[in-house]
Figure 1 (cartoon, rainbow, N blue to C red):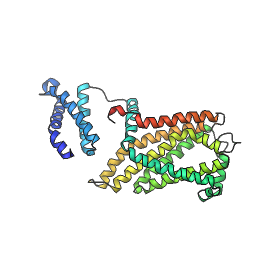
Figure 2: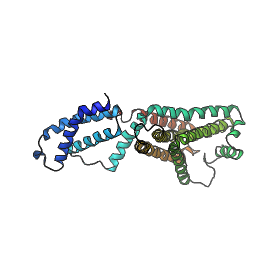
Figure 3: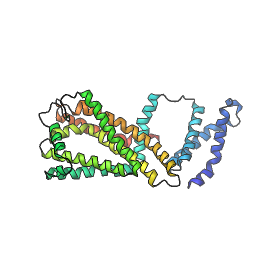
Length: 324
């Protein structure tokens, strides 16, 4: 059913419900004629909202129905607005993973654009010793070799004087900087996001391939294995948010570009917020776990396997019981 036919069929129920809710906001329930119809109307509008959401009707219609559902729910059940802890739990249990699944095909494409070039460049740098110098200069290559040398007291650091807490702050700044660039690049018609995504993938592949060839592979892989589950996934998520901005600019549909951009930006907010928390978590693991040379490599790989599987299961299954 087209949206206009859907609205024409059900607009009467929506207006009746809105009228009841308006009266209930001013009068006592026993003073409002027809108040007994509210539970039935509430169930109908809940179903209408679910249909409008699944068929991707206009955001304006979805928001209108959503507001009606919330107002009716408040009148019927009288539950107070959830506190910050409940809102946070609802965000991570439902809103964030559902936002990823809503654009699942685009997310898979972004994942392809990130990991496939990384794998290709990594393999080429592994089999061709000098290729890495076409991507990184000699000082960068030397610095990476030093960071993962077997004699290092802590992996992944450029300076021995840095403490775990100092590195935690550094990694937060570094990770969020990458995430912000991939997101904001969407305002350049998506070109900035694509360039940032490919750049980070190529750099990661070049470093991984060269260090593995140079004999530093064990230290490198045990360092990146665990926090990579959060950090690398978060980069693809901020890229997804960036592509949503680009979509508004390139294909605004019937809306003005400014309005389409505002709409897509609202859709991108959960992606950015969730990704930022993932990057903070990755920074914590990177500073206090990944860099340690006292934790056996086998334990790091075991924990990394569990975390990668947990991240995949979270985005595939979490919050599906709420209409996804």
